[in-house]
Image (cartoon, rainbow over all chains, first blue to last red; front, side):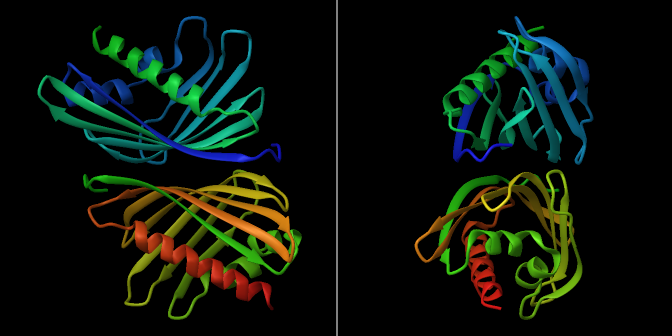
Amino acid sequence: MTDAPITHHTFTIDRVYPADAARVFLANSEYAAKRRWFAEGDGFEVLEYRLDFREGGLETARFIAPGGVHVTYDAVFRDIVPDKRIVATYEMSIEGTRISVSIATTELETVDGGTRLVFTEQGAYIGGEDQTGSREEGSRSLLEALGRELER
Amino acid sequence: MTDAPITHHTFTIDRVYPADAARVFLANSEYAAKRRWFAEGDGFEVLEYRLDFREGGLETARFIAPGGVHVTYDAVFRDIVPDKRIVATYEMSIEGTRISVSIATTELETVDGGTRLVFTEQGAYIGGEDQTGSREEGSRSLLEALGRELER
């Protein structure tokens, strides 16, 4: 907790995956699949990963990022429509200091060639440093990792 | 739960109150004061109001709005800096159907003549009907009620 200023920012990322909506939804809701693309990454050491995928259920990830920084991600699923959408709120902390409170909306739509995923993050970013660029970059990397998961 | 579309929208309301920041913060954190301006309103019947003002604590309001509609408000306090800011996430439901997931940020700043309050709502509004105007209007009414509370 600091009394640093808050920056409010929204961004949207739009991707089409060559997979049907049920497959994309499963990769977002099933423990082993989501852990693979969401928590496990090159250079990241996962200390804990939990997923209770239901409205009101929690998702928790604790990991050591490249460079040795401890990061925690704590989410609550708020609104789930199978194969259509997932709305979650989440907090991120670095070394025990909260850096953001966000709403993450994932919407799925069947299109020619597969499934269009629209990810919208609405964030309240805490602290003096501008996190908005790195958060969007991180989210893009995750959605690329989801693409690799869907090719398995 | 419906599969209606989601509208993402952010609005900010800026007010100056002729009271010091500690007084404005107290009106946002103390049960009796917050219940008066936030839950009790002309034509509203309060069925339940709970406030556990701490990070991770819950605020719950259930009421019958003018016209007989049952409304529930469920919030979690996420980030609190005394006399400075309050960040909460909340859901609203009407007749048991979730209509929104939001982040509400209240920031206080000492200025000439009192305290400037900046309220920022980042909302994911669920359902076909446009809620963005009515939510902003409702928030403005609440901040007017806070002004009356501060004149007590």
